[in-house]
Image (cartoon, rainbow, N blue to C red; front, side, top):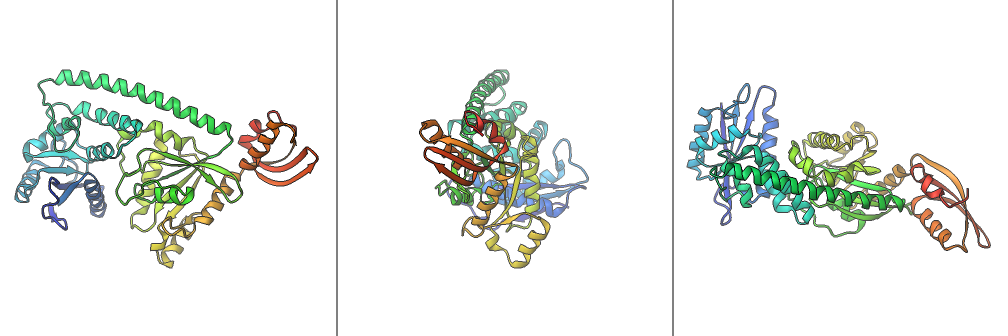
Length: 432
């Protein structure tokens, strides 16, 4: 049987804020609790898009209806509930096919969007840099292209907001041609972005500075941890997807080594493939890192689902084999029993509070240890009278663990543990 539930605070929100119904499908292979959790997350997404979720509607079926997802009879029930609550929008947690979108809109007689479209809208609102805007627009157009016929809500994406109307079907072929041309232009522009990012990564490699990237589910506290580790002031918020444009800052480690720390876009369950593809230029920062810090919000019940979602996305961007530290954040909200469970269930994991700083010193030590693995102990000789040797000594102290430093006049002998990946570049021009 379908169920309709009022969400707390279902009165009319601030002026201009759309009121929406959230719709989820429970099939034979999904549990009701999973769908309820998904609708809770969908409500957070709606709020991030400045939409007020008023109703939650769930339907049990053995399998999705190919024409309307939840069945035409249940859509009539949903229509009555939407009219009674004076709603203007229905948001489906499942990704809708073009045909389903048209059929559902026809029955409900109001605008319909799905989870993917909602996430795309949030990304469009959050993007600030030219790169971020290019990536979001490309994802939107790739999503839109197969949904042109009759999909007024989908077409409204070109209008720049959920509340606008699209151009309709009268210029269908013109629209398709225009969109394909724009997709080609955006793809070329982002290829240039990827080339420039590659040059920046090569420059960092030449400076022998290892790269560390923060990854995790959206709202896990990555940006708060980024600020804590780098003493930066990047915007951190409880809202979803605040960080779209990656930030990179220098990280100083306890062993006097320096690393480049990057804060990346948050992942989410069922992250749209169009977004993964469009953000590939950004996500290459993750795949090319020397170490990942997988930040998990340990204070929520379904953190394991979040971890699995992150692992799936890492696999999609070829980052599944990058060395990783598992970091349970917001541990200040846990009792000792919950902390002990995490210690036993995830050996080698860390527990911190990015907000209070608890455990962060230990995290820095573990980062330094992880980056120091697979090192080679060498003795290098320098002539301090040569400017290039003085620069090499400074570089050595930055990237290696110095064990001894002996000076005899201008001659200096340094014994150090050097990461093997840096040995070839470090030995060029030096005598062992």
